[in-house]
Image (cartoon, rainbow, N blue to C red; front, side):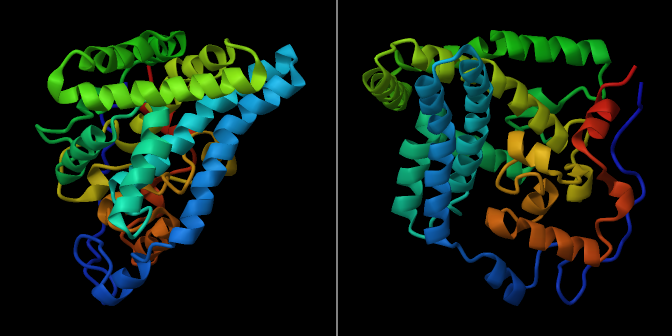
Amino acid sequence: MVATVVPQKLPEVLPTGRLSAAGRPAPAIREQLRRIPGGRNALTVIGAWAQSFGVVAAAAVVNRWWAYVAAFFLAGRGFALLNILGHEAAHRLLFARRGINDFVGRWMLAYPAFTPFDVYRRSHMAHHRDEMGPDEPDLGLYSGYPISRASMRRKLVRDASGISGWKNLTPLLKATTRPRSRGTALRILGVQAVIWGAMWAASGRWWLYPLLWFAPWMTVWRVLNRLRAIAEHAGMERSSDRRKTTHVVRQRPFARFWMVPYHTGWHLAHHVDMGIPWRRLPVLHQELVDAGWITPELEYPGYTSLWRALASG
């Protein structure tokens, strides 16, 4: 068993003329990095929808077993696309106009992915305020690592079999009976009903939605979400130095396609300055590398090597 994955020796090279002691860009640089390209982001949202629902439509047209199998897994990836863009909207970084940002974040990204947008925003801001602290909302995903391979296998089996999905669905169903949360829950379920109806009307097959939307959310997305989440923070510790709270992983095309689209894999840069939109995170990451704040010793060569470190023995 690995005793710890928290880096112990960190170079003290900041501040510089371009970066503060915490790694944040100087005001002039930060102003450039914080620009939100609304038009490009609108096309990105449309592209996420095309990829997420397009695979279902393609499977219905092909109407072969292998097409449905492929669509099942690719629809699970679709939830990564929608949720990560929803995360961007939760940070108010998708569109400069708040009303447009929140409308798209709720109705086009979060609700189709079964996510209560405003609840998520509040909890996610708590995550950024104090990673691994006593009010960390995602501590259940990160705590206790490193773990044994058997324990990791059990977690992934629960995810892949729908057990974790049911655990996540139950609060949404219960929320329909509570006055304070009923509105949001019913809006989410209403959006799901519209998606189901649209798939049924377009294909004539009522079972497309449960097979190629609901089931991938219950299974494939749960696996992808756990693997991404633990690759971000598992095994780390509470610290004001974000290098001790957040992993650095080299970004490769396969992982970016399946699990960490929209530059979300440059996660340390995001935690250093959560006001930088996703398109500019690689730029901030490179600034941190050039300053010597992020060193090769901190970077895992890929996600599999990090998962092995988090689940050994």
